Image (cartoon, rainbow, N blue to C red; front, side, top):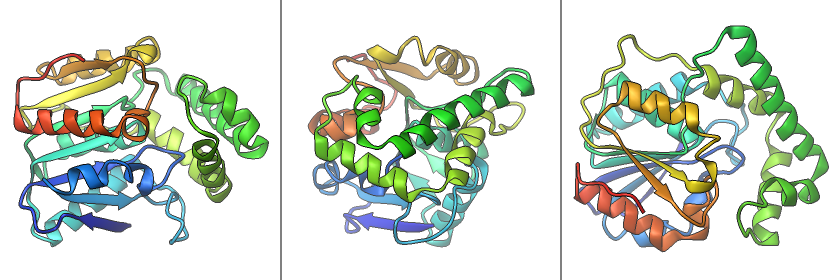
Length: 259
């Protein structure tokens, strides 16, 4: 797993973990806004790295490998960690692995483990796989419909279409199967005292189970809703607002607010 680093002269470490269907450069609009304040660590996740062959592995394995890299580079404490969707799953697992001390965590539309019978979760994974795989075959026209919640430019949609052409069917399957069903310690415990779960108002219904999971297992976490944005769109479409919100969370620990 290749790690991209920016603002290495800074002491506050912020890890950014991208969602599925994009690469690490999902954060290209926010890097210039944040590297002035943070030492940014951005992993290129397996299966979504154009410079490295391989398939997506699992939430548990990636969380472990990222912790291994941080510890090997003597980064034992993070000012913050942010993960979107698939990346949010990895953040959730890292919080409970407790190998790295995390001061603040942001789970943006993160997928939590489904609390359903195995046969149902497999059915959901098949549905999600087929939806994305059809998009892989169908190209930009299908993506225009799938991402209609946000005003993505044709270049943005073409980027996603290019990523879909790059990733393997195995990566697509293992992404959804793992994000829907990754294991968590029992009981769920974390030393992080400042956790926020972000979501778009437009996806409140879709994230109902995830919100319930967060409230059950991280009862002190704050739920923050963003208006006029779709799932995972904040960093790409409103980078200034994203950077401001991240700085607020990491600076005002325990004093989150709804937007």
